[in-house]
Image (tube, rainbow, N blue to C red; front, side, top):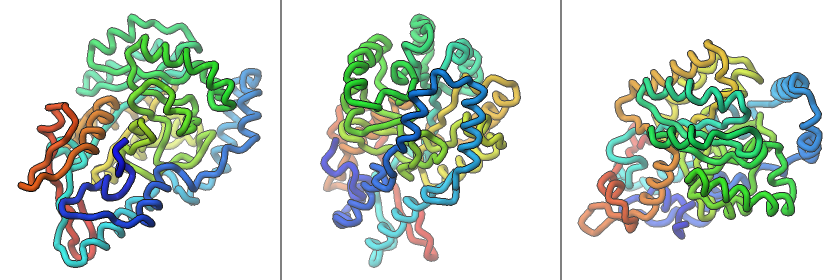
Length: 378
């Protein structure tokens, strides 16, 4: 991880801009590392021990009951939490007292306005069987996605996954059994880690997402991948609720962290029964405005009805019309974020990076932050 990766100076890479101050950087890192999130309740640990014997219908009823009890107006609010956006605005405004604008290293390759990333957690054999159907929807609209599989929960057709990769998709690992026990104790984690890493090697994965997004930053470092995708900007409905409030990648130790920033389909379809396409597109418009990363987490398990697949397709159709959107796989975003983190301004005003990826070096461009009529924009 670059030394200044999770500081505001390291994030923005403003030309001729010094550090923002240790208190500001501590607060910024506090968001990213979820220092505001309390420990996972012991009741939820008990739930995962009993989960295998709880009928599916009862589990769904419990999940809907829990969702109705969530206070989505508390920090971090759902489905949109703007506190980190406001934090960036205040910090940048504080260093613009005598400047009309600041030049920074662009957040995305070339002139791209925002990034759009498709990921799927495949949580059952039925979901695995539906991969081809969902992939066709994406392919027909010019997209590719990443599929996170649970290798010891259902039979995995590794040749099918290899064909997906050949077609430009990505495959990642989604734990081992999806039983909520991976981080329950160090002994369980140590017992499962070698097999997880073996499956990572078997499918050539560079990314990991923890089942049920249960997470421990320090233990995740031991999984042999380049990026993790177990965090989110805001989600009070997850077993380990909280949120980083970030619409951008960040560094989690040696890993690039790619938080999902659009509400999960399971939450919208099964728990809350909302208009998924309308909510997704509304948040996409905000993320585009602030040059963020719109990372979707959906499940072929729950894209199991025509009306749900239609909502998904309508969302992709909206994105396909955005000329300055970067449609990227998560592995590409992780590579880009490392290259950008290693980039620096040269004395002649050009940008270079120490990362030896020629493609990314050619895509590093300056951006401009302006304060116009009291409103900060970048």
